[in-house]
Length: 215
Image (cartoon, rainbow, N blue to C red; front, side):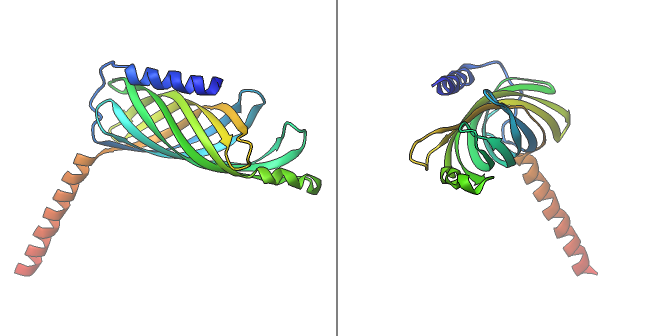
């Protein structure tokens, strides 16, 4: 319940933040981040890779799609038994820039996604652990800072909270709830600039072909 309340509060904050932003409309940001995962109850539990793509539908709002892969990690379950766990997922989210002035910007984000998790027992006697492998429902909410240090490049530091629920083992049990401190880099380009670049390339090729025909 605490996770759902936090998710709802951050969603409401992101909806009502209205500080003026610089124009990001039609921008596309392609990024990659490394995410060390911190479980709120058990401490450090793993590292995930997180590629993402954001499209800015206006100067303040963006639709973000992120995937993540949790590399295989050895963990100790609540039962005291050891297992290797690996997970991956896809999370569409809503992102709003509450502050976006000059090179720095601050955003709030929330989303819902799906994923899958795989357990592999370390001891053959604990093979029943693997029955918990299956699909996940993912809730995420958080905030982040972006720093544009070049025209097409920016650094991003985010603090997302993620709540994972197993939805295929018949119990709808919580898998994890924790914070990930992700640090990554984004490549930024505008769709209008891409169209201009395509037009220029067509004109150059056309001139080149006309020149070759006249020779």
